[in-house]
Image 1: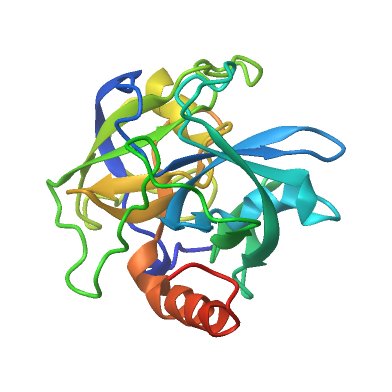
Image 2: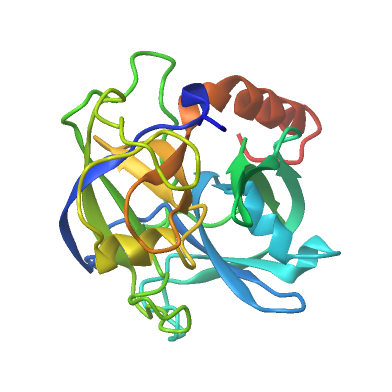
Length: 262
């Protein structure tokens, strides 16, 4: 049996409070990733510095070869339109976590762990009302059970993978305790939340929104990592506080080299 390492994952959720169009540009840190390879895919991400985006490492699996295959779009609401607020920037360098890997769970299913990646952009973005970084969390206490958090992205809006959102979607999530995540999944690992499947959360986790932020009280606490194929709980997020030392060290090294913005 494989157990989720709790130091690597933030939470599971118990209910969906709502899923809807986000207010345009109300999440100025949101990044849309166009990843071009043998198949074109999309991921989410979020702006940490003027030229640094944080996303999920497994998004890199769809981008073989040159990092030029990844284009980051900031300041977007409707990604099918050429909005005046949008800033499109190519990626100069990608830095996936060195210990990123997939753990086999049986039945052909693999769980990504250490699932985060920094993207250095070719140029800094211009800060505007529609484009701003979001702060990292501190090393203090983790998010408490009962806290309300939110996630957002441009992923699937139904069980059909090709049915993708044009405008930014958002959903509220309620954090529950690890003890409440006690039921055994049929994929042979434990980390389960009680609750029924929701197409709104399915849209956020299963297709196209990997790498997006989980935001609690205005601070990013998690990165969308994965969910069950049928859309039912749990929803797994990479716990950012676990990886703060690696994130800060990587940013410091890049800052010394003059390759990122302060």
